[in-house]
Image (cartoon, rainbow, N blue to C red; front, side, top):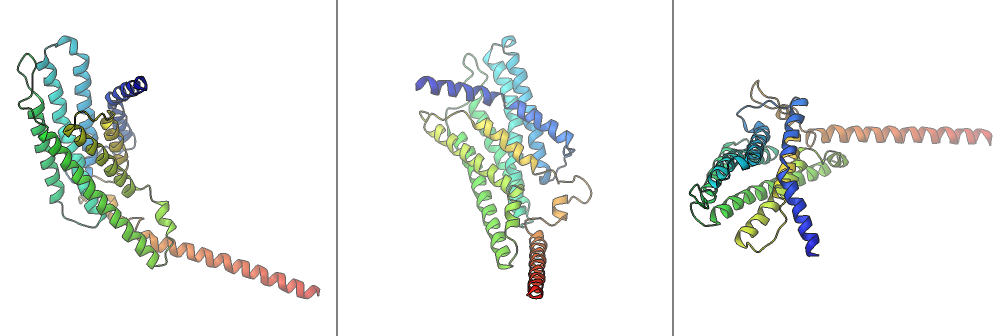
Length: 301
């Protein structure tokens, strides 16, 4: 059993380190689908997230390939620190975007929580980097030994994930309730359940699970969890960027999604009415056919 667990851990470690290939492929997908444009608004932070992630992986891979040329620990720490600084911006924009989308889905137009999320995430991440990296030979130990910065960072991310998940779930429940009260076709909601709201909810729940496991491991190092955090992060990011395909950069600063009524709200009435009209037409046709059949039978008698 121990050998199986060891082999599984080795496989996850190798896959975890190779997740940069997914980030590179995501950039290619964005370019090919013409969703590569960015600006400074929160609606495109999800794309900035992918670009920062790809750059950070590139730095890490180049440094890893050059390990033989710089065996000193301070040189290796230098390129890993550079990659982590880029990753800090990636994660800041990621959680800022999650905050932005949760607010947008719930109809809130305030934006300062998005920027506050980015700033807090960056500060906590940089505090962790100060703790983790050192450049003094021979062992290049960090500036101080404490898991507090790591726990604080992951607790903040967990809090953002939980709040966003609760907001999205409550909004979806309201939409379902309103559609039932309006006698609309509630199946329309389930037809669009894999749209951006569900993708964002899955992303928040997945990230929350990983951060909780990371907190447990930081507090209790003997807790043996599979090294899957980078795998989850990268695929969640791919899921999130797929939801930004309708974002239009430029113009008045509004995305196409904000200009076009959301199918999860506006289309309930129209599609529900259409379904109702189709049902009435079908019933009328059946009734007409039965009437004709009865007339034919009466004539034969």
